[in-house]
Amino acid sequence: MVIRQTTMKTRMKNMLAFTVLSFAPMAAHADIVLNGVFTDHMILQRDIPVPVYGSAEPGEMVTVAFSGKEKSVVTDKDGKWSVKLDAMKASTTPAVMTVAGKNKLTLSDILIGDIWICSGQSNMEWVLGNCNRPDDLQQANFPSIRLFQMRGVVSSYPRTDVSCIPWTSCTPQAVKDFPAVGFYFGRKVLQETGIPIGLIRSAQGGTAIEPWTPYAGLASTRELAKDKDALDKQMRIYMDSLQSKVAAYSADVQNAMSHGSEMPALLDFPAHPISNNAPQGWNCLYNGYIHPLTRFAIKGVLWYQGESNCSNADTYLHKQRALIGSWRKAWNQGDFPFYFVQLANYGNTSSDAGADDGGWAKLRMAQLNSLIIPNTGMAVAIELADLGNPGDVHAKNKRDVGDRLALWALAKDYGKKDLVYSGPLYKDMKVEGAKIRIAFDSVGSGLIIATKNGYDPVVKEPQGKLKKFAIAGDDKKWVWADAVIDGKTVIVSAPEVPKPVAVRYAFASNPDGCNLYNNEGLPASPFRTDEW
Image (cartoon, rainbow, N blue to C red):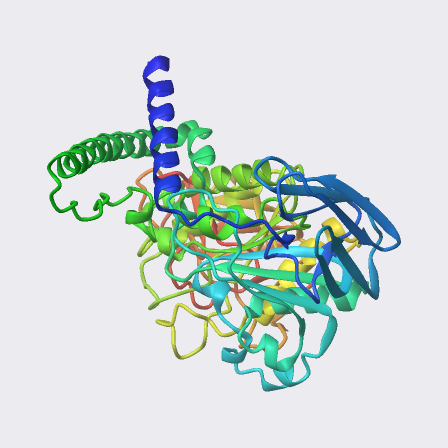
């Protein structure tokens, strides 16, 4: 079996080399070229060595000068070069970088700060100009926030080139078409810390988590073995077909040459199983959107995705683990922060207690469970969907989403250790006769009943009643429950269930009216105690 796998990998490598050599244009290295992620107005990552890299003539000496220091290197046989700048402290003073060899490049207006990748599907793509926040847009002049937009491609192999909208300062015009979640996150962190923030958009609407996950992540997660086997089978079929076509084409060319006849038409390659399955198949978006960035030093990742995986929520935790682990391995920067957004409410409300109508509730539970992955955080958005339009999957309130992500970063990465950064998160349960007591993490200074309307602040309702709690016995029949706050816990019961065994909270696609918060105004995550 090992021999077969090795043989297959060798065949794939050889065939890919054939494809690239035969059909890719030859690159010229007469002049020094920087990778496309290095432009004017950029931000370099603080506090860690920073790679700077590009191409030039093979054997050429390249010198990078920045902040009074120089680093030199001789390009390799392929004309590739890379240096590492020493770790630097945050700086809002614009600086200049020069890269010199046979020619000289100059980049200006460079700051030192923190760089965050903004990735996922359409709710991460959702731009500030579509958020109905004209004041936020008009006042979005932040010279210490810099924006960079990947124009990624679907690719069957890991790319190193970067197609992009270059770095630019945050102005109303520039940020109008930039992800709102990223902007609000960056604005809050900058205002709280003064550290320059770089934001890289690398997202695509309508995409599942699979295409953002490289093969390495799939192969390293045993719970995804069936998916790996299926992809391996597709690749074997593809390579066999490709080999047959190349052999037949070569024979046709030889025959035409020997008989002086017309040459055959260019080879028509079979569809590659990775790129052909976009936007749902494995690897293809990682290859074109993320891999080109993995040599670039960053602070962490903001991730807003999940809507496209509600039909397979049972495996989402494993896929999230595969994605996060493989990205961290690719960057080789340790367990950098990875903060994600739990899905907002969506669709029509249901009168059925405890019912998951559409997979959204299970997906949220998988996201909650993903917090077991080291150095992750989750912004709860369960009450942020637009009032009056529950069928719109794109809730316009991205300000609270970005601010809640920023709370995690401020507490975990920026030294504000006393900050309450999350709403209540289910911890455990205890049956007490005909009642169940639910305990939470992240209760802050206390649990409260509250409501939130759009962008308005959370309103406490001391005389209110907790909603959207359901309870069930061994018969697995859910009924709406009475729930009351008792200190840092919630006690749940119902007359119809004298011997309860499980509780669910806000466990529906649109649990409109869920109203458990902590005193700091952050909502409780939906949860279930069962595994039915």
